[in-house]
Amino acid sequence: MFTILIPTWNNLSFLKLCVESIRRHSAFDHEILIHVNDGSDGTLEWVRNQGLRHTHSTGNIGICFALNQLSRLATRDWLLYLNDDMVCTPGWDTALLAATSRLATPLCFLSSLLIEPNQGTNGNVLCRDFGRGPESFDEAGLLTYAASLREADRSGAASQPTLVRRELWHLVGGYSIEFGPGMSSDDDFLMKLWIAGCRDFHIIGGSLVYHFACRSTGRVRRNRGHREFLMKWGITWREFRRDYLRRSATVPSGELPAVPVPSMQSRMKRMFHGAKGFPLEDLRAWDDNPSRHLVLSEPPR
View 1: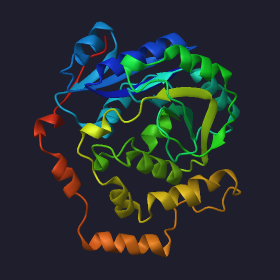
View 2: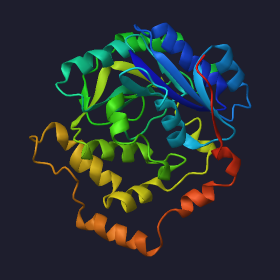
View 3: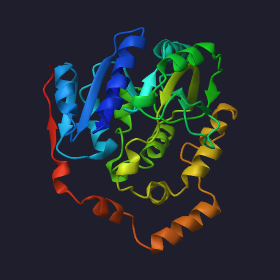
View 4: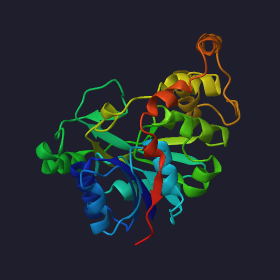
């Protein structure tokens, strides 16, 4: 029913858990596509042995290039972006599919409800520790906990897993590569959806996914995504999420502008950062290994 896009970067033990959970806990036969960044830990050989369709780059090209590579191979109507350090629980896909049938428009953005071991400030994440890695993963405890929950759907946008129609993905051009290796690329994607007319942003309470959290971002040189978002769109990501995404469920259609209007505070911040120069230096600083940009497409198997 879905094409599942999974970028991975030398995270084989997590990737195995992720793919196994999709196969065991899905009600439908989903198409799984994997982009292997580097793969020197045995990931590339494992993916090939599993017969999974995939693309491969000789270094870490980041999630924007990886997702765009995978999306062109997709054959299903819905694209689901899933991190390699996530574990799906039973019913995760049926809840998402049911949500798509309830919506009157294909212009929608759906997220699963995450369970994470770390206590954070995000009220849309359930905090419960079932392990910080494969070696300590308490699968039985997670499945028992997930089965006991009866969470309602919530308005707003969360992080992965995220689901959009393939035509909508391509309409807005997928993920923007100027946000490489990926920080704030999700916010940029949401802005592009908003401008395309999407107003239905929902977190589906019946779709529960465990997230070990940040197994790759701690190893990469980060771009200053929040600044890049501000320079590109003229508004801070916080203001966009607070005044537009969160309000879209309660404000009547048409009252929020099609192109978000920045506050004076956002305008001043943009002027301040603009005086320091456009943030392409983030990309140049990240480019310490030009060979990473060689992207090799694997033929379908």
